[in-house]
Image: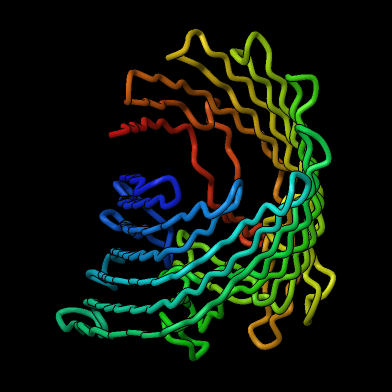
Length: 431
């Protein structure tokens, strides 16, 4: 990533941000049971590339008042390669299934935000954002099979290729308004209303079906809509006795067409997944965040506790819990600076149990047989090192390699495991 600031004068500030992010996942060895034999998916994999640029201007037009406006472009390219091979001696000489997918999303956004300080006690902020996105999906599926039907020496050879593509444009708009009241030198009380959106990723526009006897093709469009939400928030933020930070937030969110997921790309009966919109959901929650600074800020403790009641509030699943959402999240962390250049930290995170997606009736959309996903606890450690204009961050996530699930199908005893112990290094340099 690149972050560039330029100050034309005391009023006008320009900021340019550019980034590139790439993630690859390859199946070095992957075997599943299929039709009484072993099927191999070696060589399959995923690649996601995200690039973008943001141009932002800030005009400081009055004391503690400013106006921000700009433009942002992002390009998300998601590639998928699925290779499945198996054979049944005496019956199927070979069966190769090759799927190649290239899914892209390009987004153009313009935004503006104004924050005006009326006096030493009251500030009013408000902003808006418009996004135009284009989606393109190209997929090819090749099916190669040699069968000894009827029995040798005759054989039946199949070699067919099917194509699938989708194109879609979307328009989304968001805005927010936040009045802020300063009741002391360190304390603020604020109200916030936000109408926002979550636009689908390119991969979410394609569903996978592993039961073609149902009349649904192997791949088909999910016809997703963007998720639209309204959030009402009340918060208080203060810093007491020069060492104790306190933040309490109450919030209520009503979402229409929330994007949800059901499926298992590693299913023993063949990979399948489905992205769909939930009619309407609501979230009611409270979050408490605390911090304590000691030894001239060399030693910092941080704690947080979040309670979230998340339910479906409309449609055939009215009153049911939103799948994969924990009611309780608790964190605790410690950071110690050995000197002005070097520090270590440890973060502990707990997620309470949640409901899985159960099964969904294809005709009515009714969920049923939702089972509990067990709670889990994660530990992360790391370090920060600063040398002149260079900053190095390194650490270990999920230090104890805790096993937890990001997907669960308890009916068929199938699960997707979350990231195990992993390592990272980040470099930041200020020019």
